[in-house]
Length: 285
Image 1 (tube, rainbow, N blue to C red):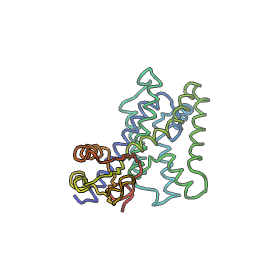
Image 2: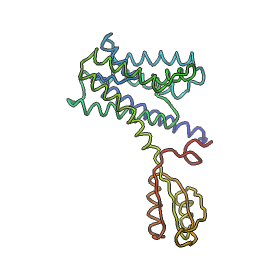
Image 3: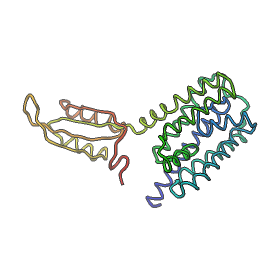
Image 4: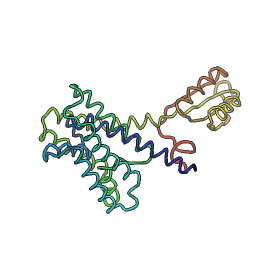
């Protein structure tokens, strides 16, 4: 299997797992509780109450309609991944409705269910973002607005989600509306937090006397690289070497322990970073 094919298989496997997480979060926790905090699934919940078809069916209809609109206005720039995720979500919700019908919420704890209704779709959205994909739905509207208008996309989508949430107060009851409003406020915060957690790396600044063993450990054991430059201690005027390197959290623990064991006098500054662009990380061609 070629490298390109292997990468594609891995990428679509990740998209499939993320979509399954989305489907479970929406079908098991969002739909039965009538949580309507925006997006296609939130609008589908409102429509299912007013027009008496299931939320899964309305999600399917809306996603297909938005895909058609996307092809009309965006053409090939629309994105195969977005089409894949959108169709898989629609079929997944329809399958769940027929294979595992739910006539009531899973538990009697709406706050607990709201947490899962927020976290699972947010987790999937963060994974989509991390592999350069989109969940479809209202993201398609955002793509169209970005291409053909000067609207602030974030504000426009928030207003759409806000009006859907307000509709929950009218269509259902104040409790459902308030839960939906809490979900709307928490959704973007959770997505940002999950994305940062997924991409979190450790940035090392190591000041030491003997850089060779440390660099060798970084190259051979951790399969990373580093930048080395010479410095001078401000008080002692003694020559020092500074090593700069970035790595994943699990590797960072290994490097920290190695330096503490082999060069206990070395000075380490370890910083969190969620946006590393370059070879071995993101955005490198």
